[in-house]
Length: 266
Length: 341
Image: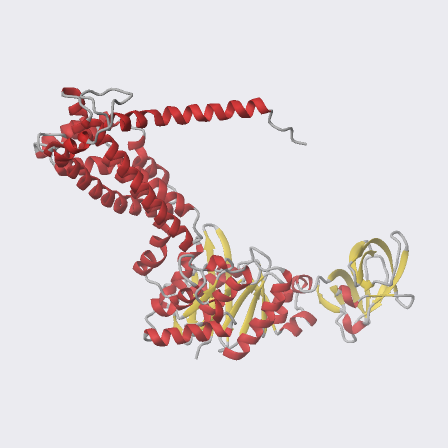
């Protein structure tokens, strides 16, 4: 007979879980609290209630420009990372011997310190193209987002029925038809999850964006960082709260889509 | 014309030779079973006909056209996989329409009509809008069959299609397969390791062994008149006994003799005795010792020691013999198959 877990252990485990959750959520609570404070300075607990910092943030050209830049960047990174990562995953899932080496290479941004990649990319870019540009940021973010798309897509491809593609061949499907009707639908849940990661990684990436910034190229995280450094006021908290809300909204949308995909593909 | 002709097919994976010298012709509309133990090359041969594996040597012709170098998508075939290989993100109807859609056969309305007809053939028309994962194994199997016949292929290839079903469903599907084949008459090549399936379904059984064809014959003939020791032991688990033939008598290793069919040539030979053809009773000419009794419900299987060798005998459940006891057994001469030693 399996002995039951003693009551005090269970209570202890619950306290541990609650503390861990609190530890994870506390910063978010502080930021959200500060964002609706009436006070001039960043202070917690908030004094009074006001949406003035939201108003200020939404009326600040610096924040609004940075937001649009980050959004445009994240959207393009999502697309490029999904195309490249999806193609890489499909290729890797079929590779036999040399696949492991190539996979490690593609996944190396996960372990390589991004500050080193940032310095290297800045030097190479400056030497070849001169001043940094939107394209430099796009490239940099795509590289760091790529491993996530590859991992999630490889994971779903590992579970597929290997006979599906052969079956499609016997039914007359050409190479392109097999890609479109068989392989890509199988990749779909992995690509969607990868897209979510890619968007978020680009949207809140700070290290690369900081190195590659120029006066016309300030992303939202860099703008927040700069603001904190030079003139901290609760606007920063308001913007951060908006970022959190966008992420949560994306997560909900994706959950719905993924949920529907699961429903459709079994 | 949709006959299938294989000429001198050979195939190796690396240094391992899996097929050699396969010559096989299947007439239009014929249902042929490729029977053999796992690893005998039967699945590889099927995949070669499909074009999924290339030949090492030899020629594949379908309907008089050499398709040896054509990829599967350009061959007019359909294949049903052991795993069914239904596309999980498509409904039953979309799965069945898939071959027509890929080959651009007919307008949409015509495709829909053919899908409906194929689903009616397998009695699944009412489930057309379901997703594959909402179906039972037997239903998925029938969707796969509908998908295989919808494009009216020249050759239908079935790779152990019934092996994933439980015993009762398998028997049902066997009857249904025979029925469907009789109605639509597709040239069919069917891979199985199950001798009962091969014997009950096919017009002709092709028994494979170690990458070659051991024997090919109609089910009755291959069962009653196996040409080799391997064929007789694979089909119906025959007992094989070495013997010395002279003057219409076979002398076993321990000196006991039994009558063999008249006109059997003298010399060393192997006797193939089917377990259901050996009679236990006082009239028998041979003496054996009971080793083990296995209760099978309707019958007993006895393992006997005859001339220093174990043989298997089926007896009615009413025959009760104790292990260790001596027993008389006999076998009618025309039930003995004499094979070369």
